Length: 131
Image (cartoon, rainbow, N blue to C red; front, side, top):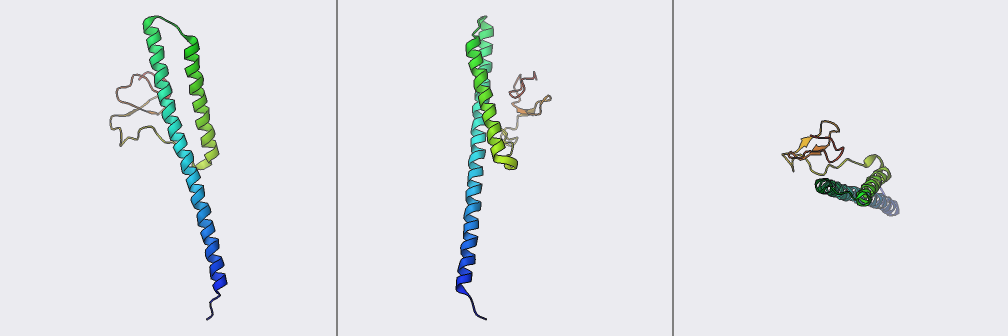
């Protein structure tokens, strides 16, 4: 039995190239999922800030529609960016909750939209439903 070292070398290089390609693809998908998670964190923060703004304005009897609109536009842009990233990621996109049940044992589920919300929340931070 004679070994063809060139054939073995060629086959090895082919598999190495396939492995490199797969690793690069997985790395890119992981980066996109991290971007989605970071954007979801920014979105939750913007939603909390908008809620705090609306509350403080209502409590003081003031109105600042331009500032409220600015927050609403920023939230809309973040939501659109998240959706675009999920679309670019394709079927590999996995919904990543902001707080997993194991990390937040006091979380509960919104009866209207199914989002996870803190136990002490008065409103759902995803759909705005009163809890």
